Amino acid sequence: MRFFNLPPQIVRLILLIFAILVSYLVARTLLTPDTFRDYGFFRGAALSEHISQHKPVFAGKAACGERHPDVLKTLAKGSHKNLSCEACHGVVSQEHLKDPANKMLKPTPQICVRCHEASPSRPAWFKQIIVKDHYSDTCFECHLPHQPNEAP
Amino acid sequence: MTLQLTSILAEVAPHFDGYVYPNEAGTHPLWGVLIVLYPYITGLVAGAFIMASLVRVFRVKALEPVYRLSLLTALAFLLCATLPLLCHLGHPERSYQIMITPHLTSPMAIFGFVYAWYLMAVLLLELWFDFREDFVKWGQTEPGLRGFIYRTLTVGVTDVSDKALALDHKLSWIISIIGIPSAFLLHGYVGFIFGSIKANPWWGNAIMPIIFILSAMVSGIALCIFIYMVLSWLRRRALDVRCLDVMGMFLFYALVIDATVEALDLIHRTYSAQEGFYVMEFMAQERLFFTLTIGQMLIGTLLPLLVLGTLQVARKFVPNGIRIGLYFTCAVCILLGVLAMRWNVVMGGQFFSKSLRGVMSYKLEFAGAEGWFLGIILLSLPFIILTVLIKLFLSERMPTSGHVPHRMDNP
Image 1 (tube, helix red, strand yellow):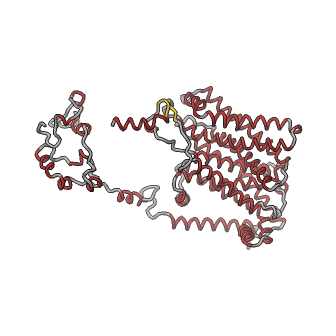
Image 2: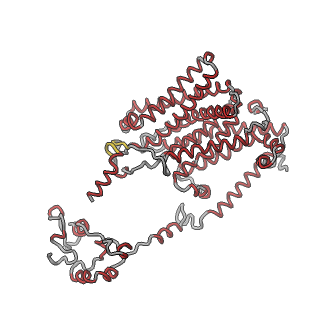
Image 3: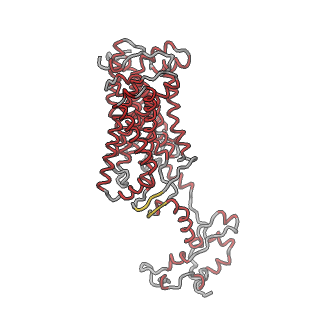
């Protein structure tokens, strides 16, 4: 085999390098994932796969109402009537649905303060406290979260 | 909340002294023993190749007995050099993805090109040109699978005329010349990876690539001495003492330059005493005392320097048997010392807080993805590969062409 009078080992090396390059390009075409580079230097489908695996779902008030209709009835009378149960008690877990003995989160004063701490960005009609001036070790000694308008 | 904080503190507090940032309060450093092994193995590759180029390019006749052995050593270690990194990332089976989606946006990604260049364009080509004549000969005489391997490796070229061989040697010589800067690039790049981390005073240092390549040369020559002696001992062959003396001489020279540059670095750091100096001083005296002071400085540098230096001056007065023993001891000490140096660089850089006011203590585990058991497996893998390579290409019962590389490089 003689190309341009090149020595045989050079010819073979060139052919070998060419074969390696071609097989690399073929492998690259076959192995590169379809959605690669859709959004950036990664497999685009990885995002949607990940999101579909971990879909965040709130159970919603209606689900809570199936087992706790009395609480919902009480709640509907007060000014917290528009709050979702999960806003204070955390997301309803599968464990809690299966076995009520796995309790939901018990709200702490920090949860109340998230909304009721004084902040100029909140409207004036909204009930606010300055935490350091307020007796704030525990809110529930004086307030009922399910009936905020009534004293215990 | 308080309970949580207490439990975190109770778990974390024993590992730290001084002030550390909360995000540093993990139970392990991010990089473990595998990241220590990768610069170590890569350094051995570069060092063994430079050792081989002493014969090919610098025409050191006395080292001819170890020319092929050091090239095969470089190949065996290069094949395993990236393995610790891939294991550290946790999914070695995905490594092909590095090759099908290459990019140039991170230093570590560019390292893929550096490794590929060194393996495909330098080491394999030089080996092929050097062994081609023997492949043709062995392919004709050896039966069975062995013969088939040799015939495959000839890639169908059976021309072993004087003209063809002269071309082989010429090309091999050119590749060797390209190979020396490539070996410097390969291991200098490891140093660059650490040296370019400017937020870490232990690493961020322009002299890091130079220190890495010099210590790589030292460890590579020491590894060649070690493997040559072990192989001769296993084969019950007499050692070529002249070759050992010359290897010892080059080891001494490389060690002198390496120790000088590292000492300069130390002096510069001590005198300039920049903001990270005090925590580094504490680390050197407390946390890394055994690996830095004892391992790297005493066993890895001072002891071999003294022994090899004495042997340079008083070689005639030391009997062969003792000299061989001393070379072996020095080689092992240097191999351990350079391993300690890699540990000090990789782990040392993670042991102190970015606050420069606190340090972490770390106990190496036995099992697990970052345990020393896996480290030992990865470190013994190149030796297993080298055994296979030696059985295939340096077999005692198959005569080699007996060509002398340096004499035919410039026909």
